[in-house]
Image (tube, rainbow, N blue to C red; front, side, top):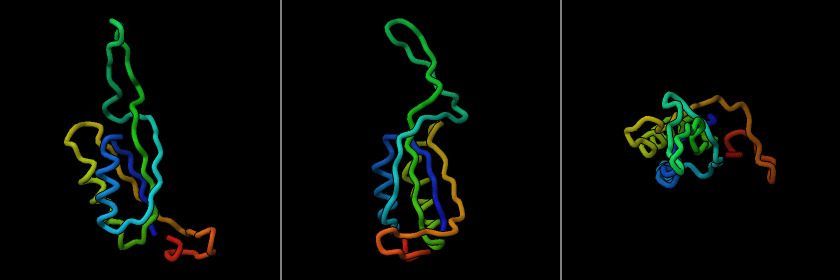
Length: 112
């Protein structure tokens, strides 16, 4: 099993969710986060004063998938979240040792 964590631009969430559904992902967790990468934020003008926005709004998506679904899920996220501009995000994949469905007690891939 794999745990996939992706950081994407907020307006790409619906596209990513639809792309993941097409490859068979049944559930995911979404969190609104703030951060920056190489872009280092940006400058904005508000009431004539210029200020720096260091942390940009992002969306963090987490999903647990079977090993066979990890590569298609990564590709779906990358394709759907790509705008070709800086700050499109990142995808991280971790080995997931164990999972348990609380309601039924199922473990491993059955719990996904």
